[in-house]
Length: 71
Image (tube, rainbow, N blue to C red):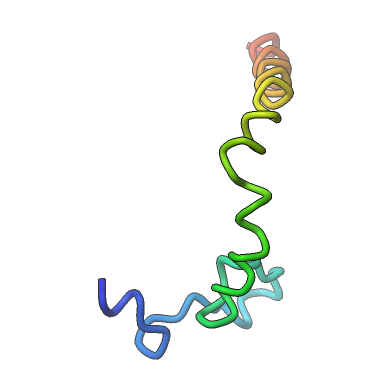
């Protein structure tokens, strides 16, 4: 665990991999990761996600139904 939490030993940065876009904050190391998490965490809090649940479930049912009709 100590190694995974030390960006000098294990970095989350995947620079140069086929020019893929960098996912923030996943591919960032501290302290940048921490700053982005502070900004993004309120958008993914349980009450915010709960408000989206019905729409997410309806979308997933529509996608699965569409796939199921294809055999």
